[in-house]
Image (cartoon, rainbow over all chains, first blue to last red; front, side, top):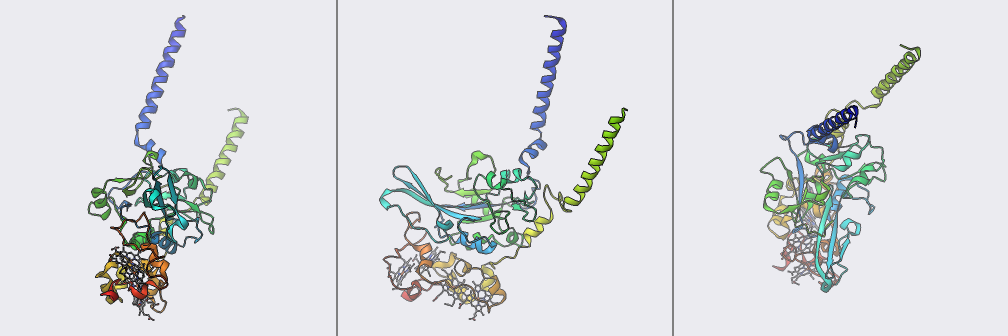
Length: 254
Length: 149
């Protein structure tokens, strides 16, 4: 082996080590994390909103889904929902049946005979207002974003309707508005909460199964809810840092 | 500097200049105010008109009914859960809100279903419970047991 060859190999190794070290340092740096997740919890002093959903309380009346459509002018056709209710029925043989006729707006009827049912329950679904929202990360034009209050919003005059975000959402919470032809989704009733009102679905829930609140306020209903219940989020393995917290969420729920 | 590089550099400068001009006109004014989005969009989202007034508003004029409801089984239900959006009505009482009718309306909450827990909601089978009559003929929706006391 020639001397030059050894030298060049040594140089190569030291360069490679430096490069690897550099990449390691910059990845562990926060600013790269911000690039990866597109969002960052900026201001810890202002409000930071989320939602609690108590499945132990939900009676599946569907008023949340109906009210949401009235409040936000969502198309009445049964494919467009900002929030909807699913009925899960686990049969004795272990199979799971999920139904959501018109999102629960028309009421539920149990099709499975009682003796075949192992367990049945309702699951209201809505945008999870993730801290690391996949939908925000994929938007090519910056038409969907995290508000300073942690609410994921859509800029409908800037959206180009490319549907990337609809694909990216792991919870199926987005759709293309049939009239405006742009992405649309739950805004946590941004227009209401910024005026001090409750989101419409929370206002009309007859059982108090939906709990809205500020995660930064130790006295808020939501913080109390999180303290008192063994909550879970949907699809935690997706690492979205969802801000919709479910009490009584069973493993069968997807 | 070789002349072809000079020419290329000039071309580049023109392209970059054009790009900057185009960018100036295409990027909205408030873009980037708070983040990678149009800052004005926050205001636009906030400006949407609410349609539900919230229960406190109904109390201003219907305090009698409010008191009846608050003392009875439907106390946890907001007026607008049953009567629909009420802000227009609260601002102008001549435009009346929904008045729910029919057995299906009550059944949405009260019909028998294995997913409903008995301790959460009392259930009846609408196909068996006093069929052929409206629920409200026997149950006052604001005080369900009023007529049976």
